[in-house]
Length: 215
Image 1 (cartoon, rainbow, N blue to C red):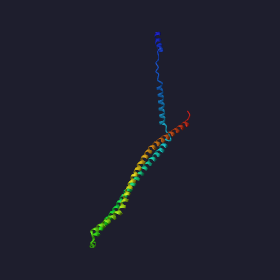
Image 2: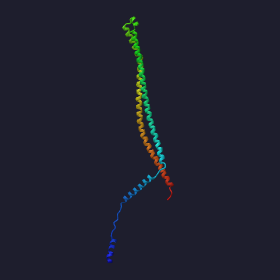
Image 3: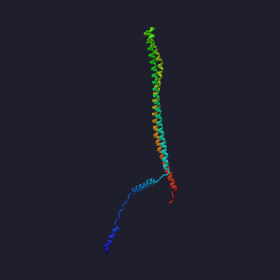
Image 4: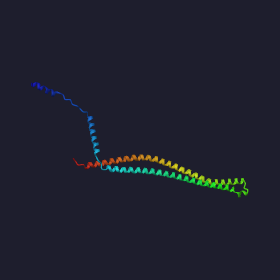
């Protein structure tokens, strides 16, 4: 009986124990992931005193830049509107003057017709050829004094249209240039804001390390 009890114990002692080996690469990856997770959790839990100040500061700067752009666009719109309103007013004023000159010409023509049709003039035996000569001379005089007026009005109208077209082209060109600068400005503000935040956070982290109690 004693011999039978000893045999199982010997078999257990001589039995080989299988060991499971974990690859070192997997262990390093697990450790690295754990460290990264701890860093992320620490960053999420860290509250920076300067964060609200920096956010407010850069929000005010970006708001000022945005308002400046809106103000510039409004000035351009008002400038073009003023030019168009001036051109429209001058056009109406010129039409009024042209109407007055045409009315004066019509009055002169009616006066001549009435003068030649007067019975007292008829007694002086005015011939039809003389009547035609007088009317032709009067028409020539009217054309002479209306010619510089019409020419001046035409030049004024063309000049105003040219100014309006040039103003629109200039504003369109400047807007294209401003748009390119605005993209660069936005990127610059974004990067500068990020650098400012990182610098302030590192400074606070350094101060925390210096004033932290030694364990």
